[in-house]
Structure formats: C-alpha cells, structure tokens
Length: 485
Image 1 (cartoon, rainbow, N blue to C red):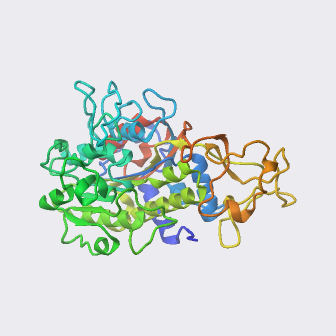
Image 2 (tube, helix red, strand yellow):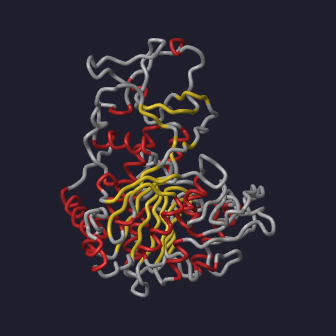
Image 3 (cartoon, rainbow, N blue to C red):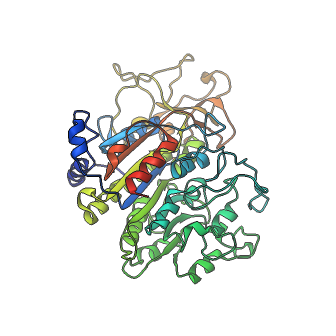
C-alpha cells in the first residue's frame, strides 16, 4: 500500500507561492490601491492538470484513503479554488471530449466532439477509426496549446491513457468524433498527411500510452493506412522511448523533443503498475518539465497533465483503483510544484491549474464512523460502513452490511433482497478488484459520468483570477489572460 504525506518543504513552498498568487483576491484591497498596482506579469509557464472523472466525492474518498479524514492532499492546499459547471452543448452530463475541449478552447461543443465549433455534429468514425465527419461539419477552434506554440513556448502532453484519447487529444487535434484515434495520431506528426499545422514544428513532449495508433497493422498496430508514425516522428528529430529504462535515460540537456509510448493501449492502473516497466505520472510530469524548461529557444512552456485512468476505474466501479490513481495524480501535482519552485522560486512566472472534466456516480454511504487512512489491517474508506457509536456494521433494510463507497449505477447490483447473497466483509470490499455495489444495474464497465460540478484550484502567477463559480468555458479565458496568450 502506497501512502501519501505532505512534506514540510512543500508546505513552505505552497505558502511562498500563495503570497505570489495574490492571496485569494483580497476583497478588502481598496480600488485606489488596486489601480496603483502595475499590470500583473504574464505567467510564462502554464501547467494544466486534469483529473479525468475526478468528482468531489472521489477526491474526498481519495483524501481519506491516503491521509485520513483530517489529512490533506496537495490539491487541497492550493491557495485559490472554486467550482466548475461541466454540462456540454447538447447534454446535461458531458463526456470527456467536449469538457476538456471547453477548457482548451473556450467553446461549448457537443458530446464526443474534439476542439471544434459549436455547430459540429458528432459522427462515428469508420471501422478503421478514421474520421467520417463529412464536408462542412464545423470548423477547428484554437486550443491553449496551439496558442502557446504561436507564442514561441515549448509544449507538452502527459497522460496515463492513450495519448490519442479524448482529454490529451483536445489539446492538439480537431475532429468531429473522439473515437477517430487513427486520425488524431496523424495530427501529431509534423509534415505528414493530416498534420495539424497549427502545431507549427510539433508538440515538444508527448508521454503516455497508445502505441497501437502509431503503428501499422503489419507491426501489431491498428493503422489501416500502413503508416509507421513512430518512424515518422523519429525522422522529424523526436527521441522515442517505449519502456521505463529508456525513459529514465532521457537527458534533457541533450534532448529537445521526445515521445514516450509505453503501452499499446492505456497505461496500467497505478495499483497494478510495474515500476520497472512503466513510469509513474509524477515521473513523466517531472521529466516533461525538465525537457520543456531546458528549451532556451522557447519563451516558456504549456504542459497538460492528465490522470486519465481515474475515470476508467470509476467506470468499472473498482473504487480502490480509482482512489490510488487519484493519489498518483496528486503526487504528480506535488512533483510539479516542487520542480517548478526550484526552477522558478515563488512561481513568479508559473501558473499551475488543477481541475476535473466531469463527475462520476461514486457516493459515500451511511453515517459511518471515521476510519482514518487505508493501511495494512485497516481498509479505511474502502471498508464496510460501521456505526460511529457502537462500531458495529451498519445494515440496510434487509439487515445486511454495506460498504462505505457505493455507486449510483454500475455492474454490481444484487438481484432481489440483499439477504439472498452472502454477507459482505471488509476483506471482500477492500480488495483491489472489488466492484462496489450500485443502485442501478449497468453492463460491465458501464457506470456513467455524473453531472455534478467539479473542483478547480490554482497556484502561482495569475492564480488569483481562478476562483468562485465558473463555467468550464470561462477557464479558457482566465488561463489565456493569465498566460498572456
């Protein structure tokens, strides 16, 4: 079991950066004093963290899992915070494509659409996962990453999903349907067919999974066009790595652009990850920062970091995997703050934003007693709900115990009375692969997103503009202005 604590050094760093962020927009500051202040300098460096599916209930459960009810995650300590509405152009409950695209472009779009205009109609791709959008079906809209490229800044994308998945794709590609991953991959390759010219000389750092969409079928990939995009990237000067050893050997002093595709599809859940084969999200984040910060020919950086598999575990209703991936995401935030404090003390030139694209249906059940953090011998929030007075298992209308964590919908729903099934135990419900019970039965892996607002937090230069109750499309404008893009 990995545990997480917030070091004294990071707390001091956060306090220092909080001062530079504007201290939360002090309402007591007079208008005269505000007018006397010189214009705020733009944040040359922007790191945008996106926890896919990381709703408020998930972050609460992850905090208890990692640090106990009275503990803290790094994201809890950010000096600026607020809430974000997530609905898409055509749906009360969004999917990841339009929600991340809203952050990246400031435009509301339909579910399944990646960084296109509001009038774009989502059309399923061909059997080869290439675009089937049709003529005149919307138009591309500029992303923060593209604006950063235009501003001569180094750019990077880091994710635990396929790099062609919806969230990372929204930073660098434009397509009417998120599943056209073969086309999305092609938009990354400078000079090739379908290349997104708005990326100019290309995204500088790309780390994640999804090798299958960069290789032809003859080489074990899924590309029907026969192209070997890995070879094409190498020919354009990218350093390419596919395993942990090669990743660790990357020297930022000698490497200007790098692509790391560590798995054929998504990377492993952090709970299952072999650290000798796959880097952690924190390791990929730190390496990306080192590479981007070392580009003396650039005027800063824009880096997007996604904790993508939080969402996948929630769809499975495997809460332990979701919580561990949330902690791994939080550790990447900690690593980024610490690394940037060394490069930019006080984060005077750096804005770090942390948010989520949408919620899920995870809930915390019952009037459970405090559990403290999960540790050997203590299932914590993953265990059964116990009465806060007697310590005995709480029971439902059938007289049966139930887990603290449940889901509004999911694959594990007992048919009929729960008394017809074996009584749950702490060992059973806290297992790595246990699927928590749900109120509405869905197909395997079919738990849905939720429509609840999500958290946003920020630290560093310009962070004081990011607070309150926001539309997701507003975040784009706030980051754009803070970064001077």
